[in-house]
Image (cartoon, rainbow, N blue to C red; front, side):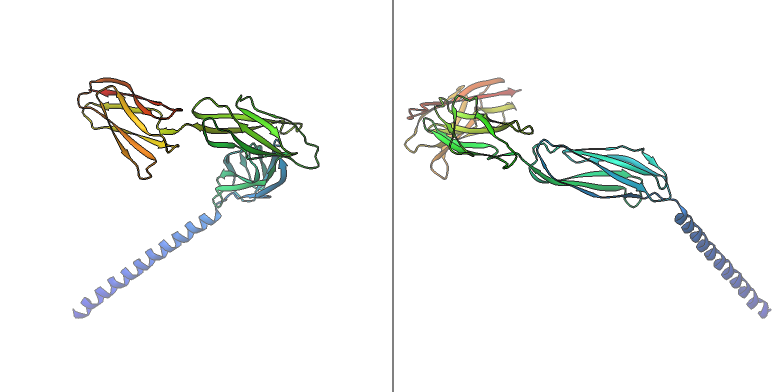
Length: 340
């Protein structure tokens, strides 16, 4: 009896060990089969003849066009999902979308230099079902030059005191050896006069502006270049009096009645002799408080709504009286609306 008791557990243990060994081997074999299946899946692979194209040196007005050739060197079918380009480029697939093994295709890229100057680099992304390179990046690069260079590209007169003259220099330089000439330089702005100082230097004068405020305009440069027949040079600046202020319009927007809301105006004194003599605010249920800023040449005026202000639209002004002969009164509009 004792021998039977010992024999049975040994048999069951042996069977269990065999079963466990069989299950493990089966799982291992199953994993091997799955791995073999993965290896045998036919995958596409996209390969381009070139990834980067350097177009060298071109002038503004010349368009660049290039075709990138590629091939499906994999075993599976290659599917081109999309072709996307960065700003300044257009790209398109000029072959079929689905390519079998060893079939070839093309991506055509067009680049318009536009206002780009100097070294430029643009990219095109080809999205496909290639598992290794689903987003293949192509690059088009080169140098964009001008037949006529203008410096500066924008003329900034800055701040000009009313009644004073101001001028800026403008360099207009054709590329040597290609027969480019400057035919005419002018501006329709009545306050701008242009004079030629040398073969490449021009003086831009701004005079007799009757108003206080910002101004802008354009200088037109005419050439015999077919690529740059006319070059537009914008200009801007500001004519100031004895006092400058910001903002030029006080807006409370739409606010609910009872809210403690204020707006601030900063006053800067261009002339140290100018002083504020009086301040008036309309309508009368608006309050103001003036204080000096750290630099002593500026003041701060805070405008607050009174407690008795009625529901409805606000329409008024902040009037600042000074001893300036140029700006005796500064009138800043006030607007807004009180909601119930």
